[in-house]
Structures are given as structure tokens and as C-alpha cells.
Image (cartoon, rainbow over all chains, first blue to last red; front, side, top):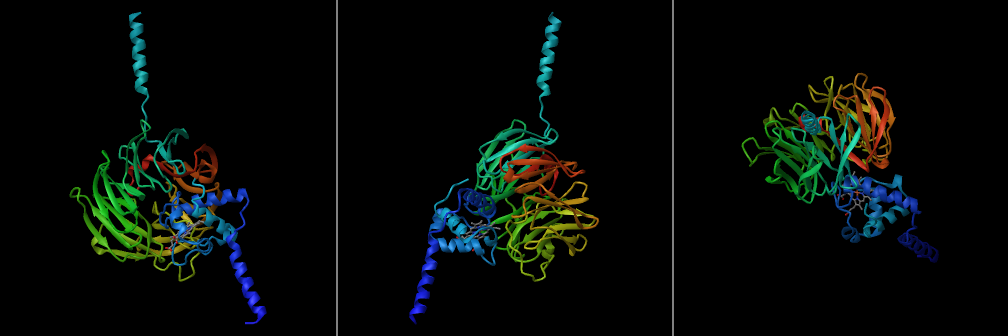
Length: 109
Length: 381
């Protein structure tokens, strides 16, 4: 591998690790996202996220997953299941922020 | 003097008798965030009382006792609460499972059945005492539970792709009939108002599973099969609800899934005869009581609008902006007004059906389902 390529690879790794410190959405957007979580995600996962047609999204279950994998599920959905993709309605940073909220049991309604 | 006193006493006792509550124009609105229900009067357009302590009511539904006095409220946390609309108090409550989704009341009004996700199954209770009469484990999430004539309950198994019928006509231990391989992931079901036809919507494939209860021996057949014509489905942000089968002029209307269409079916053959394009994923399709127009609401992100389909031309006749989070709608018994719950506006809005204009709003926190007592007389309600 040439030095230049190795540098690119390293940069790639850096870029990949950056999202772990997701930019926090501004407070009004946070409120919108939490409302979306409990109301609209809640229509399948239960308003208190303890499960419905969709799996429970409780902190115990979410802690076992990485923020990256949770936010990837949120953005892309799970093809072949009832979980739809939310990328049209939120940015990747917002999905990561929601994922951390799920892990910490963020603001029950 | 003495006669005057007697007259006053008579008047007093008369006025005491006057405070009766007629239940025919009452209803219940679920306040999904607060575990409360609002008891409403549809003639006065008022909230009479708020009743607290019903647990998790996200996705709650209601059936009524045959005398319209009691509302049985099925909560998501497995709570079954019997609300007395006359005294406006809780008359009984059982926490009967971990996670439930809906319920039904038998034709004779004596049995209340609850469908559960966790643990999957159906539990049946005595409508008077709320004591458990029967427990039917299914090993699968149960959806689309309805009552059918002859003390029967019919329901579908989401994970297993089956339809089961529990027949209580011979007593408290039901005779079970199971239909396997009805299709992938039935998500909800309905029964026609004559109690004859049970139709389950499938999420995992394009189609519906139909059971003719006049001829249960003929089994379940597939209708509207492949309505998507193999096209890539659109994402579904909320599952449609099959609450009513809207039949008008020999045609029935059902929501497509993953397609912004209302499917039209001939009820003589149960074949698709058309589709009406609408603006989003349909959730509820409800006919006005005169059956001339169908009112359709939508999944996120189109849940601020309602479209009206004219059944003669089979096309959209009006698009109304009703308000944010329009979750459910219910017509007054003869259909001159319609009540719409606006979850994100903390209001229920009442519209005039003839002029299509809003009349008034009631402040009700995070309203979802609206249920009026005339449902007491309807099969499958």
C-alpha cells in the first residue's frame, strides 16, 4: 500500500469514528424528535416503547446494540419487515442522537 | 300551608328523578398520553367527565355493553377497564396480560374477549364480573379480533399467519377451528356488519384473507391477491386499521398497504374492480352513514389531511386539512357531523358533513380513538 493510500484509509477510519460524538440537535428539534419517537414510532413500538407490532425499544435492549447500528436501522429501516426508513425525515446526526436517547431511556412522555 | 309543603316536596322529588343520563348520545375519547378517557355528549358537543387511571392507552380501543351503559376499554398494557358512563366512574379493571391490542364483545353481550401480543393469545372475561372465563394461548401476536354471530370470536395470528375461530355457543370452553397458511403477517381484520365475512389484511404480501362465516367449512381464501402488481412497495409509517368494511353500491373499499390507493372490490365476486389514488398511505376508511362518501385519513407524514371519496364517481371529491395528527374519526349516529381527533393539536374537532366546515373544537389532550355508543348494536364494533 502506498503512503498516500494508507493516509486515505486512515482518514476514512477517522471519518467513520467521528459520528460517535454526534452533534446535538438544537432544543426545539430535540423536542420534535422526542415527540416523533413517542407518538409516531410509538404507533408500532408502543408509546412507552415497550413494544407492540415492533420490538420493544427499552434501554436494556438498546444498550446491547451500538449507536451506529440503531441509527442505521432508523435511517434505512429493515427491508422485509414493517420497520420503515426514516432518512427522509431526519439527518444522520439526528438519528444518532435518537439512538443515544433510546439507550438512556430518554424523556418518557 | 301543609299542601304547599307537600307541593314543594313533590317538586323536589320530581327534580331528583329528572337527573337521568341517557347514554344514546354519549361517547368515549381516548386521551392516549394520560391514561384517561373523556366521556362526551354528541348532541351538546361537550366533555362530561374525564376518567383517570386506565394505564397505557396508546393504541386503545373500546366496545360497549348492549345497554350502552358500560364502555370496555382495552389498553396497551393489558388493562381491561370497565367504565360506567352513567356514574362516570371505573366499574372494574383487570390487568390481564403484558401487552394487548384490542377486544370484542359477544353477540349476547356476556363475554368480553381481549387479544394480546405478550404473551400472545386471547383471554375471555365475563362482562359483568370481569372474571376470566377462558384463556386461549396462541404463541403469536393476536390481531383483528372481532365478535361473530353465535357467540363466536374470530382473530388472526400476526407471526403465524393463521386465522382462528373460538365458538362459545356450547359454554365456557370454546370449540376451536384453526385455519393455517392464510398469508404472511395479517396485521388487522374486520367483519362485515351482517356478521358474515371476516377479512384480514396481510402485511407480508399484497392481498387479503377472507373467511365466509356462513360456510366456515369452505376455509379461507385469498382476495385482492397481488394488488401491487409486483411494484416496489412504498414505506408504511403506520399500519392501516381495518375497522369498518365500507360497502356501498355493491362495492367494498379497503386500504392498500405500501401504495397510496384505496382498493375497490366487488362484493359479489370479491374481485378487485379498481383503485382510487389518494395522497398518502390510508389508515382508516370510514363511510358516512348515508354511504355516499368515504372519509380516509393517512399515515405519517400525511396525517394532517382527510380525503373524501365519492362512491358514484369513485374519485376523490375533496381534500380537507383537518389538523396535525388526525388519528381517527367517528360520525354521529345519523351522520350529520363527524368528530376528528387531532393528536398533535390536543383537540377534537367537530365538522359539519353537509357543508364540510368545522363547527367547534373540544380541548382533549392527545386524543386518539373516538367511540360513540351506537357501536353497541353493531357486529364487529
